[in-house]
Image 1 (spheres, rainbow, N blue to C red):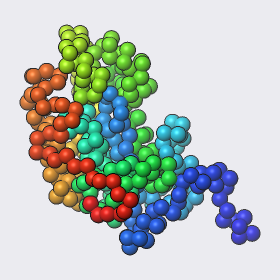
Image 2: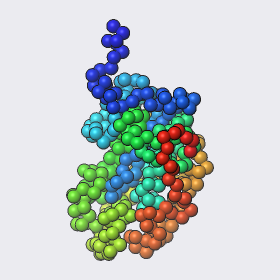
Image 3: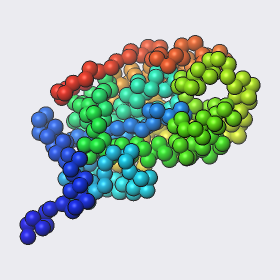
Image 4: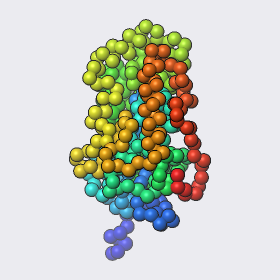
Length: 338
């Protein structure tokens, strides 16, 4: 009878055959800590739009809560949306979302922008869900994290809190791209989320880039540097900007404004987007403040150099921006404190 009550369902058993419910508990026990957050991102590869990261603190021992949670890339859109709403509705779950826009990506490169988005996601976690340990999908962790941090390659297919973060990040970014599709019609952002599909590339040839495109990414960077598009691209970008008056790229995420709380969750879901400062009352490391200040400084530099053309001086894809130090933490199987 005891086995009948406690044995997972067949579906959950299959899920647990790849996912490891014990990762968070083992890490916390090893470090003598209490709270663990999983972190993942969405949107590193697209030609347009922001990169979005999420941090999730959740009780992974609850079968009902973790049902269906796995790498967002293998889930259908409807399943991702349902899991996102389940997490959002559970009072035991804390969610932080960090967003870095296309302009900053062009300034500091996509790797550094991803690290910045992850830092913002952790900073955005509500105070009652601040973690002692951060588990991050992939081989690198942000050098600015104050918490114990551990990279976990393919973590979104192994660790429930990381997988949950991958779902939150994906759903959040997909919703933002729907808003961008309405602001800049004709590119099909709703359908391909900014990735370089045949339809997207065809739209670029037809319309030229819009203000939300990443000009440091190929093929856009090469095309623009060679004078591709000329007056057509400039005219299209101007028309798109005029048509979206009042809905400029940074304003498109008005529903996820800097430091905003999701009222439906009682503040358990917080977002830090397009900002130099964290939400009022949030703790933030000095290193993180310097990183955000550097990103703000390079954004100001980019605006000042805008008259130089689409690919202004200092906007190389490998550039990291004035006053910013490129740091790539070494891979390590050992837990460490950043």
